[in-house]
Length: 323
Image (cartoon, rainbow, N blue to C red):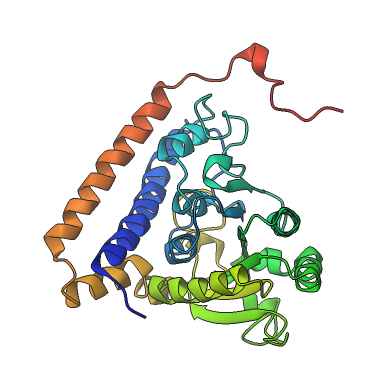
């Protein structure tokens, strides 16, 4: 797979942007100004970036509670994301959704769901809509370990295969469902590779290698656009922080420091940075300039959020579904 300098640098920018936004949220969260639960995706940036780099603006994605990276990778507005965490009217969900219910239909982000596995049937339904309208789009859904245990996951894949729908199922295997390790809930290395390749393209990749994710997503998206039905990618990655909130969770006792350090040595951002520098695509100063520009952008987003108005009391009932 031929990779240009521009693509490598763009992937690096996207990944660092997501990582530094998460770190900034973590550092600010203790101030209790963000009146919403947060689920950080530190360590999983390569999956969102690698997949969304193969999608276009009109393609759809559906996300989950750990969805900040998906939102930004699909082109979501950084200021709108941070304002949403502060529950401001200028947030991407008008301050009504918080961290777990991000939406921006203008860039094809059709919404995050706090329901475990909730985005999977939504993405499948979007795929049915695409096929009926013959619009040529792709519907991608990101989900993780807990969702892979849900019956709706298998029902949705069966329906997508049956109807040959343009859906890309992206399984972010980050090893844990809250505090329960994948080995306690699934037998074997892969969860869904029993299906024949003639029915659905499937792949297993190192989810910390953005180039591997990008390659697999490219093959899957091409297959889907060619009318060959749904595709499935399992991305092996790791959630470096706790299930929810900010900071380390070693005190909970379900994993040890050695395990976390092992995965930190496989940091997706560091791996890409090393490839860029050793390959001569850019030097350390080039990447430092990118990082500084990102930090400035994040500063502006947090200032924007804090200065934005809260929803008006009389408008609290707006945007609700009523029969």
